Length: 125
Length: 125
DNA sequence: GTATTTGCAAACAATTTGCAGATAT
DNA sequence: ATATCTGCAAATTGTTTGCAAATAC
Image (tube, rainbow over all chains, first blue to last red; front, side):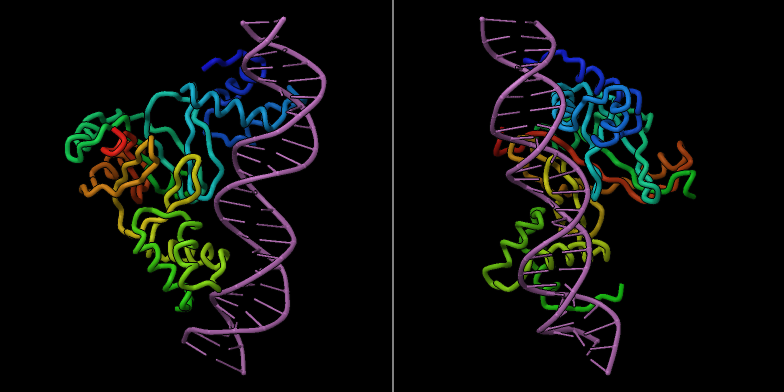
């Protein structure tokens, strides 16, 4: 947590926030590069990991794709179009009762849950 | 779908079923190797992809880990221990009303959803 | 008989890492 | 002043692929 506030880190966090829709590390790098040509891909990877460990952004893993990053730090659900592969944040209430239910039924300490809906988006219908 | 029934494919499917707890490709390869020394890792990867395309097994992607394989072909929920990284099938009903709710609210064709609960398992408490 | 699959090795893609110099505190 | 971070390149990890020989149908 002893993490310094470098220009690179700020630029990377801004990029994730500006791109919004779950970019990969590579996409973030390409977005930044024109305005900050000296930045290196390694630095992007390192900072994305730090930012997600510090819960400023979230990592999302998608089957057969590179890791994606979500600018929203709080828990929420996602929709993924199986055709165009687009990933979308869903604006619906996080259901804490699910965590409680599973915790009781299986005697586990539940921290949170994630839901990903698969289907076809409006554009691909 | 024009897929031949080779010994390798049978052995690989059996391995996933016997290992049960969501092995990686590498783990499946290592499990098979002693009894079938000529098998190659490439063949394991190829067949795991074919088997999951044919819905005989499922792919699961876990953050910061290799793809894992689930011997259960039908939809179900998972628990992941954030300490020991163990992934567990949860025996609870699949909630189709969630799919309906999202489909209506966002005007999407929903095929299915996945839920992964994060927390600490009994062994790690 | 022939199209698919295999084993092998090389290629590829995504991510991490070691290091010497630069920078934040 | 010094511990952390950067850029760079090389290394590592997970996975795919091209090819000639083997095999399923």
